[in-house]
Image (cartoon, rainbow, N blue to C red; front, side, top):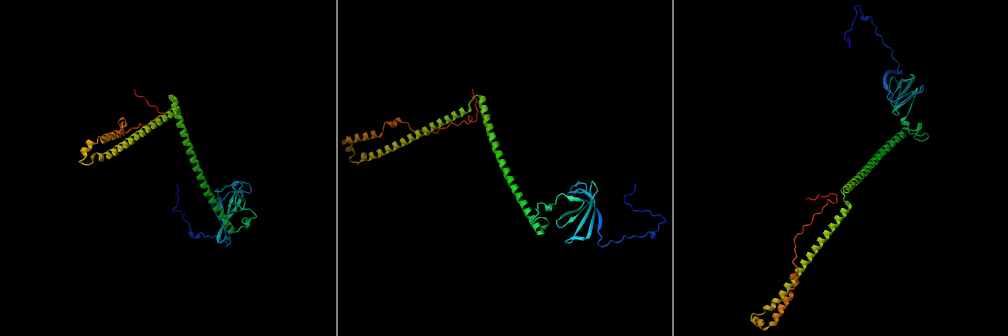
Length: 309
């Protein structure tokens, strides 16, 4: 196998280097275009005018690149490319267009779309060949601003729509869960032979009755306590009024007690009237703590407790 890189070459014994002449190619003229073969991809989609074959953007070609020194735009060099149709081998020529930052087809094909001419209306001040560079820049800036505004508006509208959908789905899911749980309770109550609604009504009625009874007992106990305290205060007032009449002076105590029996009878009558008989009949109030019975919430959920034998 031969070497890939030849480092030593064979020279025959009769080789004379002086006999080998040095040839030079003729110099090209100053305005002669420079041509070189390059490999490129189609920068745009085009259609061949000879056979109608479509060649899409990105298709690779072996092309000849021609550089003409006299073709420039604002000191920017313009390059011309020569390719052939993939079907009929017709020559297609296109060149760079620095003015529009694009390419321009000259011969052999027709471009499918011209992006920088899209949306222009003939007859307007902004369209066609009458459009100046300043007008084109203004139009492009307006288009970009409108596109950015529309994208932001669309994003906000999409976000609001997603939020509303999420809220609606959550509400529907909650309603479904509530309906399913209620149906499950009703089915369980029916299977056990107990009317759930009737049990709930009866339970509420019993609780209201018990609460009313306890409130009545508390009110009665409070009424008795206040009545007993009021009677004790009346007795104390009567006793305080009788004490000055009984004591008097030391010298007249015996005489008054012996000589005035009517006052003794009057005092006994006052004390007898001050102690009513109904005080002995009424029992003293009790402030004993009453433990309320806990509410049974099992009946509300349809839970039936088993009785222990």
